[in-house]
Amino acid sequence: MSEAGVLAKLSGSLRAKFFERTPSVKERKREGTEASSVEMLVRRAFAVARGGDIQSAIRLFDEALSQAPDLVEINEARAELLDMAGRTDEAAAGYARARRLQAAVRHGPPDRPFAMRLRGNFIVQIHNYAVVIRSLSKNALPYLARGNAYLASNQPERAINDYDAALRVKPGIVDAIVLKAEALLQLGRYGEALAVLNTALGTPSADLRSTKAAIHMALGEVDLGNSELNAQLELLPVSQSAARGCVAMRLASYDLAAAEFERALLQSPADSYWQLYRGTALMRLGQKMAIEVVPDENQVWPQLLLAYQAGHVREEDVIARADTKGRRAEASFQFGVASAGRDLAAAKRHWQAVLEQAAPTMIEYAAARNELPRA
Image (cartoon, one colour):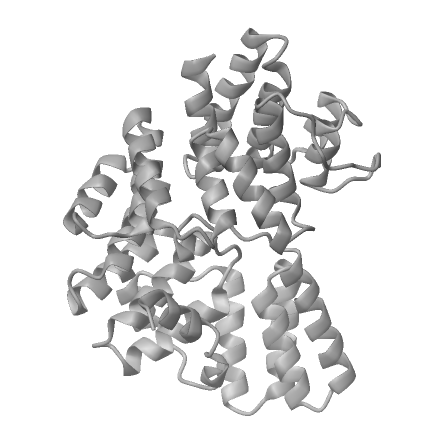
């Protein structure tokens, strides 16, 4: 099994650690993991549950959920305690809520490294990996797994500490090298990120190529970024149509993107993003969208962008619902695509807006980098 496979398995098998020792204040300070109020509540809940007071632990989880109601892990942990307390109906409702929340999470693009596809706040996993590390401190994988949880929880500095620890235990781990570079990329430390990746030169890794491409794009080095993307494309098997389609979109290689997303939709016909990107590619190729969209003023994201492509909603309607920088960047890219055939200057303004709003790891960021020199 690959390191990524082991990590995925390890990530899903930590519930047995529920009643293990909670890290001391001294240990947390040594690791640089001073906790938020929600984290402290979760740790107290574990400690109380370990002592046998399940009802008090449930109340602590209730308090944590009052501050962060949509965290999947806390909902799951509370449901497990309710099960243990014999409150089965409440537990079933808790599990159902956790499943609904998890189903609503859109993971990152499949052409990105494993940890970069994760979305959420992994407080429970971070706590449990700390327990694992105390008994397996000479094993690199728990450090790597906790680093991934930190990175996915938008804590890149802490992630770097764990990736460094993993590399001290086992020098040369490609996953740790790539993900440390990803953490540095999140922090805008592009030169350091490239230097880290250069320690793994010669490694045939699609993830490494993806990370290096994002760094070059962030630096405005489009030709170098495209070279890495093309190298990544060569490493991705033909069976991974969605991942290959995402790389093609970054390259603004629309004929390839349309073909790959056509295949991806055979496997996942309801995937809104694959529909969106296939429609985008067809529009840039001057072809009509083959997907019918039913007009609905209550469309959710990204179906709203599909409705925009189909001409059912206006730019201002999309802008009003673009409630994050990422969504505003996605919208700006679509506005550029829609404008390209009739007003190239407007298209360029929209694509420039993508660069000002999007993270360098977004598909639209690289695609806009490639569109602007052509416009």
